[in-house]
Image (cartoon, rainbow, N blue to C red; front, side, top):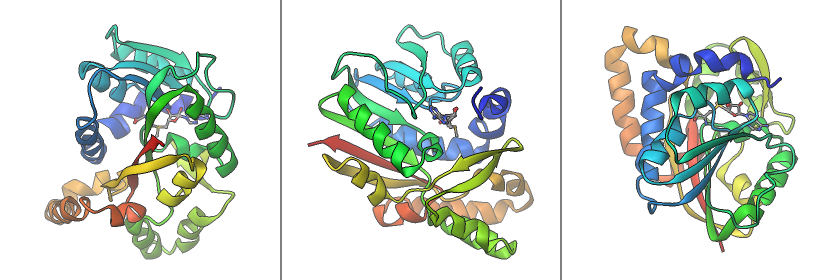
Length: 254
Ligand SMILES: C[S@@+](CC[C@H](N)C(=O)[O-])C[C@H]1O[C@@H](n2cnc3c(N)ncnc32)[C@H](O)[C@@H]1O
């Protein structure tokens, strides 16, 4: 039983189809639109398969994987495209039993890799390297340590310790649908250090507002339209990646 199973049935309603969820995913999809078509993609921590469906419509072949059976059930029900297959895969264990160089791209969206400790992350990324073709790429969307909005919000709430724990090696217990999930946060540099034989092609923020602000958008519509406008400007700069809610890092095997 995975600690995300209980979140699967409501995940799309509570994140994928929210304005903040959609806003951040659109940023990722805009980026995915810039990669060549027809790639063999291994998607890790695919959740309910929202991205697998998108990638398949763009002409890619996708093996979409997740540790949670319930997430995979949702993903299969949503996606009937013949270019997608699904498989259970725990990123803390051995990576797929497939021939070397089976994929052109490894894709991970929205913090699945934040469920791994630093050691697990390094093992995982290095094992993924084995299944990537020469010149293969990884596009990973990760939660950084230094989220600016989280810092301000926790300070305002008198919960600064919650924020500083993001910097701790042992991670932070985060509530996912009322159940604790141990979560580890990484800077862009830490991701690159985990795979030193990869070069960073790009690194961008995908959004600054955490999804828990969704409820407040209607009450303070004007404020959020200003925030989204500012976001639109600063999101163009790689410098802000480390301060975002999530950042996208694009790595290529050298
Ligand atoms: C926040 S969700 C993101 C889902 C999806 N990528 C998306 O963009 O909506 C995190 C996902 O990571 C998966 N996950 C967590 N730990 C994992 C592990 N050890 N191995 C594989 N998947 C894992 C969870 O089951 C969950 O589906």
